[in-house]
Image (cartoon, rainbow, N blue to C red; front, side, top):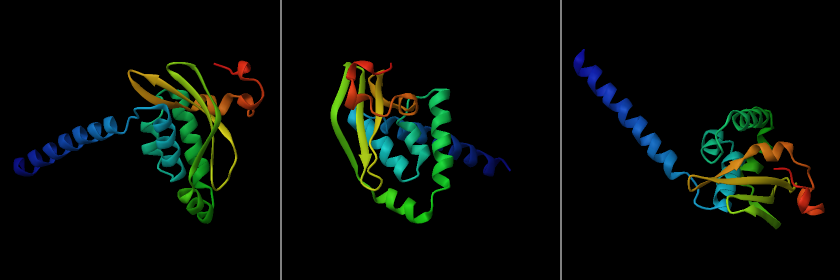
Amino acid sequence: MKRIFLPAILFIIFSCNNSNQQDEEKKSETDIDAATNFLNASLKGNFNEASTYMLQDSTNTGYLFYTERAYKTIPADDKRELKEASLHFFEPTLRPNDSTTILIFSNSYKNDKDTLRIVKQQGKWFVDLKYLFTHDSDTLFNKIDTIHH
């Protein structure tokens, strides 16, 4: 029994350490990397991966869970189109300070513009979904000085 138990424990420990290394490698070095990585993972329906590029708090986790549930209801043809879609980033990109970027994006399938905030914490960039769900839809196109923080 001990012979089976010990290898199983070593496998679990190694898997956890390896997972932490992979999560650390997935952190983005630039604001655009964070947005691209997060959005591509989301378009492909890989919300576990998307969460590694997201600012970790309960509100963001809730929004990602909501998005994942909505994604599951999308017809298979639409999911295929989303997985194959490319991203487009528009100007203006707003950088209110050196640790926050707000950018406008769309994907080639839906072509609907939306706005995303990316924040820098401890030297890494993360997507803040709260902004996506709470800002005015045309904030950057109308009055940049009305952006909510």
